[in-house]
Image (cartoon, rainbow, N blue to C red; front, side):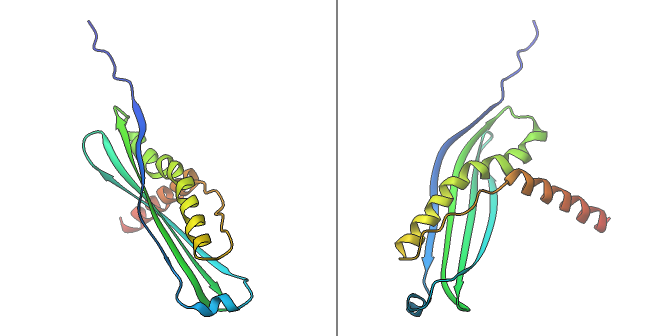
Length: 150
């Protein structure tokens, strides 16, 4: 009798805010006309917890400058624990580097919007991010770097 092929399983088991912060370096920002320049940075990190679970942390940092003065720095580390069981090895990188951050981003976006508003700044809604494209670009860059170092 042939062995049954195990069905791949992918599931989000828990989502949580690992860390968040809002820093307002000076109150004088509130006395000036609001015309900010935003610098937005995104990164993700995957950590294997056991044979079937990974913790993914999506870090979103937003620095706002107004009239050449730092207005605020908002940062969130949005985390999720994902079950990846019987997933083909060649698909794990794409899942951890693109799919999981894609799932976490709406939650991180909401936290950023909330803490910025609580800091008495106008609402900040981050635009959607194409993590699949960002992952593909990072893979291409890694190949170029590997060829350059060979």
